[in-house]
Image (cartoon, rainbow, N blue to C red):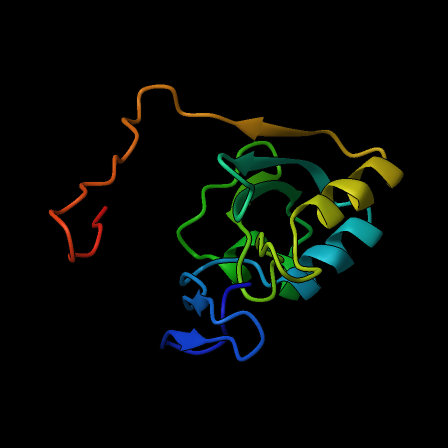
Length: 137
């Protein structure tokens, strides 16, 4: 899950490097509240595992407005697209953290969601060194 603040940190349990949430992203707690308030219209999970996700959120004005979260997010017909940020569960193989929990919540709330795959993006291939070296991506 994206970390609060502005620096990477290493999770004690998983040894995974956790990057800070992007500026203008919606914290997971606010996403859950917007879901409860029926303001989330849909979610796009970005492949390969949904660690990066964007939600279509109804702009309700006031402190819950799109511009309060991200002043640069355009609002079209009362809806904005916000990146999910601090607290968003990321896929970690040896823990309970996973975007699949969010999918389950969305299914229960009957909110549409999709896994977006960018077929134009070229995969990174590992370069294997000669004996004794370390593989690089």
